[in-house]
Image 1 (cartoon, rainbow, N blue to C red):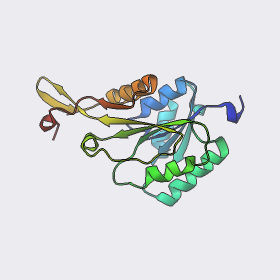
Image 2 (tube, rainbow, N blue to C red):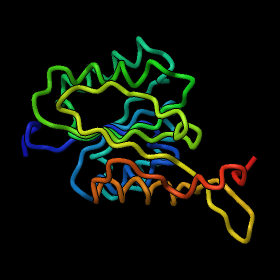
Image 3 (tube, one colour):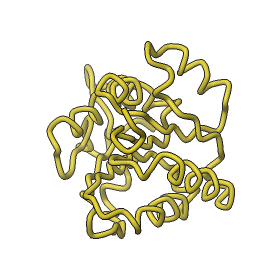
Image 4 (cartoon, helix red, strand yellow):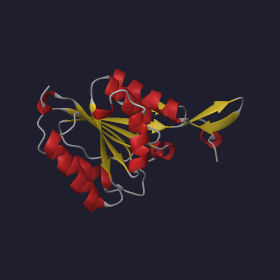
Length: 186
């Protein structure tokens, strides 16, 4: 299979709560760029995959914009621009996602962005500008109420929710619940 025939995905948050999403994407035949801050953690994750050659590290702190741009642009130049982006970026790095999306300007084919956001983002409904050929999907991470006690979602629950969005192409999804808001974990 030539480089141009391979399907690529980019996952931001792939060595944490989205690790299982990375493994699932590999099972679906994707080669997955994983933005990670800790190469050792990435290598451990990679060792758990039966096809480790399909997990490609982009070791960089996404708060470091110049380094992020360099890593992403060189990977895209070498392999091509991904068909799918799954992004979990903390609000402390507001320029990281726009910087990455800017790398898609030259792409003509349609591609998907799954924008994973925290629960409080649901009430803000920020406008994320994306290129015309981008199919934007928004995923809000809520919480779970069990026996009248609330807790945050587990990594598996989050990964299952993201995978479900990929499989069913939902426009906007809440994983868990956001109601009643005053019952969320403190």
